[in-house]
Each structure stands twice: as structure tokens, then as C-alpha cells.
Image (tube, rainbow, N blue to C red; front, side):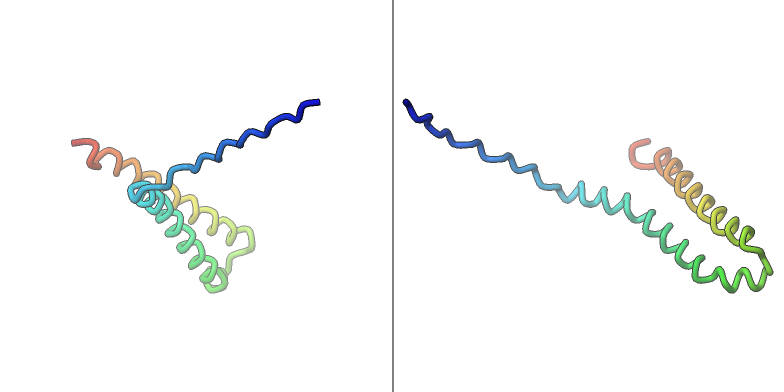
Length: 91
């Protein structure tokens, strides 16, 4: 009976590391989301005062929160579209 010879397993390939340009792209994508979350956090802290001053119900307060988030997201999309139109790629 012959003993099978062991072969060396191929070393796993190491994926290439991200370049500085890729990291900058990631930062530029993450900044608007950080701005949105910061704005919504400020709104959540202000909600008790807002609802007391406006004498709004729980449903109306929920509407305030949702509409604010939708407006901010809509402005981010619009600003991105405008940036695409007048950005450096349009020259």
C-alpha cells in the first residue's frame, strides 16, 4: 500500500488594500449620512419642546419627524443631482 504524498496548499490570495482615492470616496459618501443622522438627533432632542409649544398629538409629532427626514433626504438627492450636472465631469 502506497502512502499518498501531501501537496502544499496554495496560499490564500490577499485582497488589494484600498487606495487613498477609495477612502476619500467612502468619506464623501458617509458625510451626508452623518449630517442626516445629526439633524435627526437634534430633532429628537427638540421634540418634547416642539410638541409642548405646538400642542401636537403623538400622531402629529410622528408626522413632524417623518416629514423632516423625508425633506432632508430629498434635499440630499437634489444636491447630488445638481452636483452631477455642474460638477467637474460636465466640463
